[in-house]
Length: 39
Image (cartoon, rainbow, N blue to C red):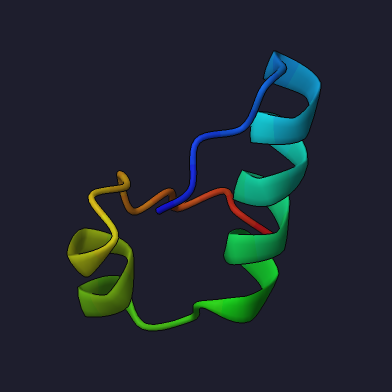
């Protein structure tokens, strides 16, 4: 997972992943917490 230079870019990337990755196993593969409230 590429490091983002600012918290805003990090948040935007996480928001993208929340939309793109529906499978919780993919979230875990990326080292991200599976968020129940991710839309």
